[in-house]
Length: 169
Image (cartoon, rainbow, N blue to C red; front, top):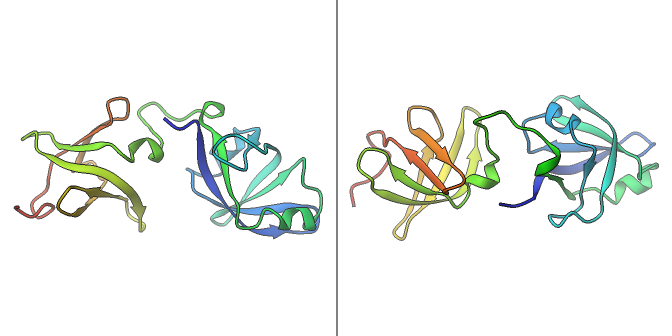
């Protein structure tokens, strides 16, 4: 499992004192507030110490100790920032989306393997898993009626296929 996870993308500066606007790719501002540092890459390089984080609509306004001017903040524009998974706590039974990518998708009733999760999208109502098999892509909603169990340790997602989700091959 990856130690450093994407948390969001800096899409702009905020004010003159070095704050940045972060498009959050995590569960929200409360997740960010439990962190002390963010990183500039997925290796943990270039740590930035969080001084403050607050919500503004669907983004976070973040002040880093190392960034003290708009010019310095400009250098972070369009950068993806990372967190160390060990620095945060998530609810029991929850998991990181990065841990689901690559999981095998298996029918809980028949044992049929549909493929592996290649991507996760969200268009509002729920996550959608993009499952890739040797033959094609399948898109399934990540809802309780379909996804019955997720085991990131074993890299398996058990599903109950709803009628019409998978074409008969």
